[in-house]
Amino acid sequence: MTLRDDDRRTLEHMLSAGTLSARVFKRATGLLELDRGKTLRAVAATLHVHYTTVATWRDGYTTSGLACLHDAPRSGRPVEIDGTQRANITALACSDAPTGYARWSLRLLADTAVESALCDHVSFTVVRDILKKTI
Image (cartoon, rainbow, N blue to C red):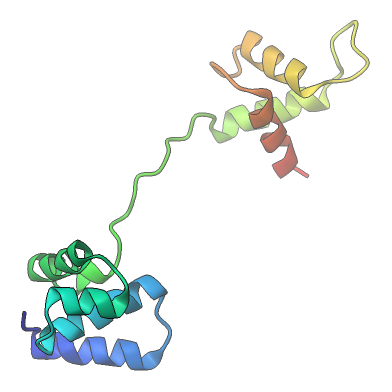
């Protein structure tokens, strides 16, 4: 694999700056080592990664250039309880407890939130996390 001259200079500058994350540092080092003529297996042994990892870095560089150094954004877990629902659960916890109860429990808050249609489903541990973040 051969790097473009400007990409090689960019990688060398990035490595000399010393402010890279470990993941980006390994990828940049791997690309430079491949450019110097090392084999995939030699680079993998040097950086303590798998052979296919180095091959993925190489293929990523050929398709997208230096953008391969950084991970693609991940979608993450979708939000189940939005900010309005969180505010309603917090307001419910600040209100008076139902008749027959001296105070709110987490399980009672979760059950009441579902019964009141504040949200479709919520566990008492999620209610705990919501209330913990309001302190």
